[in-house]
Image (tube, rainbow, N blue to C red; front, side):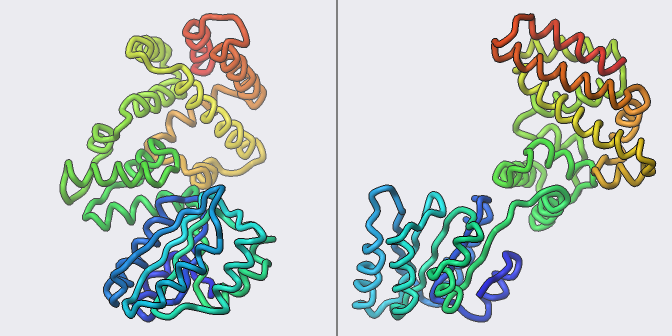
Length: 333
């Protein structure tokens, strides 16, 4: 039986399956799904746990031997099989098929692995598992899904913030769920329950240097050249890596190119901002950059960014901070 991640708790409240296969590349979501199954199993008497990790020299026959040994005892047990990838191989496929055909009593098996491709989902072992157990594929959270996930996590801990605050957490953690989860826990510890302002979030974020870079990017977009040089001097003096600054500026340039193209094609700017999640607090500086820069200028700036990347890597001569200053002034001109 295939199950959506958001339906797992509802399923567990009704019954427990003999096998759970949880696949996906989002480690935090996979871990939390396992935690839910473990907690529910423990409530129903599955006190004993045994874990196996599939390494290069792992013998798949160990799974059947362990399951057979467990069946000699009267107690309920939870068996876990953790894989670093999703390569089951010929032996693994054969053993899993056999396990599904001869399910041991009083045993729940949890299997975790990375994302499965379409060929694996047509395999015999997958079909056999689908008939007797639960298959849950965990998908990455992107765009607005990630924003909504952050919002729900905050609400679970009694915290709230506006769209700008949510976007700030999302930008600072770059789509990394585990990092976002850690920041949210920190916010709860620092502020308890209630509504959080952007300033409170910015102060609490672990990588304050990264937040300062985001502020710098907005300054460049707004075209405040005096402030650009002042902020860049401070960033350099604080020892921030130019790689981080260049990454943030290049990401913004690519976004500007997409937005500018949509604007040239005749789409209303308000609609474009909504589609690309440019929050109201940033719209003024982004609009300022769009008014100054043509598509051709943005393209040339992206090419310049590539040259700066080569300087950072030592593949081209130049003083990176001098080059960065000229680059930012061109972007903000």
